[in-house]
Image: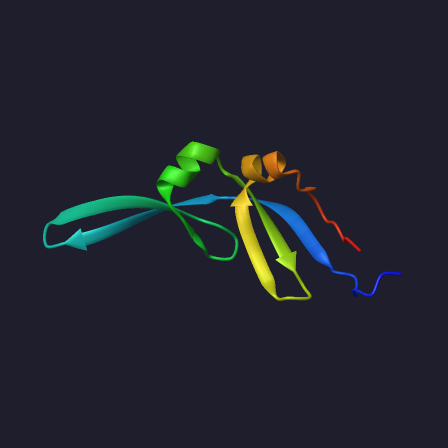
Length: 87
């Protein structure tokens, strides 16, 4: 008999957005780019270059924990991608 309560987790695929910014300092204009996820989380450029633009967001509703990892890493760990509810 299982005494633990069922744990609800959801996983979904999100894609990184590339944001291009410009800054004017005196007479010069500097441009820079950075990457963010849908939750306005910053993703370092070297991580995007290494793993690609697809990431998995895993939301544990019971514990209130959100985990973000590259899709390639999630597939290597054997995490089911898409909406899932484990019991």
